[in-house]
Amino acid sequence: MKKITKFKHKKVLVLGLAKSGVSAASLLHKLEAFVTVNDQKPLAENPEAQGLLQEGIKVICGSHPIELLDEGFEYVVKNPGIPYDNPLIKRAVEKGIPVFTEVELAYLVSEAEMIGITGTNGKTTTTTLLYEILSEDKKKPLIAGNIGTVASEVAQSAKSDEKMVVELSSFQLMGIDEFSPHIAIITNLYDAHLDYHGNIDEYWKAKANITRNQTNEDYLIINQDQAHLRDVVDFTQAQLIPFSTKQEVDQGAYIKDGAIYFQQEYIGPLSSVVLPGAHNLENILCAIAASKLYGVSNDSIMHVLGTFTGVKHRTQFVKEVKNRKFYNDSKATNSLATKSALNAFDGPTILLAGGLDRGNSFDELIPHLKNVKVLITFGETADKLQQTGQKAGIQTILRVDNVEKAVPAAYEHSDEGDVILLSPACASWDQYRTFEERGDIFIEAVHNLY
Image (cartoon, rainbow, N blue to C red; front, side):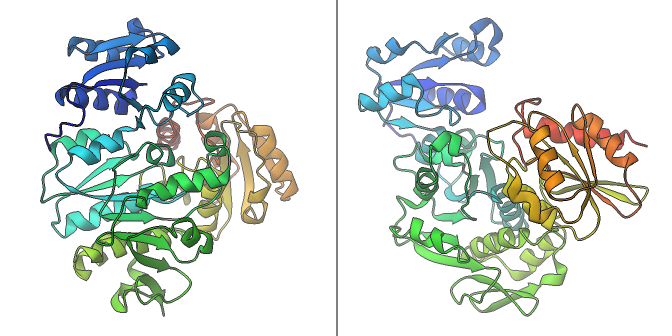
């Protein structure tokens, strides 16, 4: 870990805990900052805060008192999920106090080079696939970020001969100052998280922060098939490496005549890829482009592509029960992700969908529901999804209480050869703490069928 002095003897407020806040507070304490932690949850119900208190860190729990910012803080490190219209954050910005997320700390202390991966969809699959390819080629990768392992925790033990593969959300990327990965990847950009960012331009601007500090010695891998994406990052100083599933791009990764290429070099046949779904071709090309920039062998790439079946909760094959295949796509928290999952299957499909109501409709799903023979809905958006299913002409539409009850209902209405797909098109927070919890309940319910 780099022994930086930026925060030494500086007053730093860590706002919001969870895993990232705990890691940030502990790291800042090691860097000899004067740390105060503020979390909404009362101390008696807050084991994370209690642990930090035992480390000698000042802890204020139960509310976010606005007068905290009168104590002379020089930095604020916030949980990515806390919006910028939070009164404490608004006051900090007004007072000119820098507001970071913990990925900024990770970058500052990491001895390892970073590969940053962002985008609307495909981040987790690309991150995991790239990690597996680099591991296969003995490049000593570490995996971190929005994928579940806190970057600032991993960075503390990262070595100079390792590489940190970091999944990054727009929320995290809004809170950076010096952060600059050697290789940045933007998988794609669509509408998302507008309830947080306010409008699409602010969302895309946050994503583009991944290349804000890159130099001409760095690389930016982007989706050539999205013209607007090139405009969003037109300020970058990094070397552009495009990828495309639709056209040949000499300087990047592409598909031609049933094979995968990088900068006109034949990598291997597309027929060897076992990861399902056309949408995953983008993720594969991203991972290949980054791998080849590090000199990874084609044998290592093709070995992983021939064995990598996907990420848990992302079009994950769970089990075949009496010739019905069950897939867990709980990470599909928006319509775009569900469209991609539906397009991955050609045969009759039973779709399980529903969750948190963010005020949007689901009519954009209609053209992609042509193979859906049964729609099973649950959660706050059940009625909206039923209406969408009716517009799409789906004959059988059922409403159930939750995912656990959706599984046996789906099996009961299925036939041999059907795909049963959990792809909610919604966040999980109306009924479940995380999409992982929702997916795990689905998996357990599938295994409980027989």
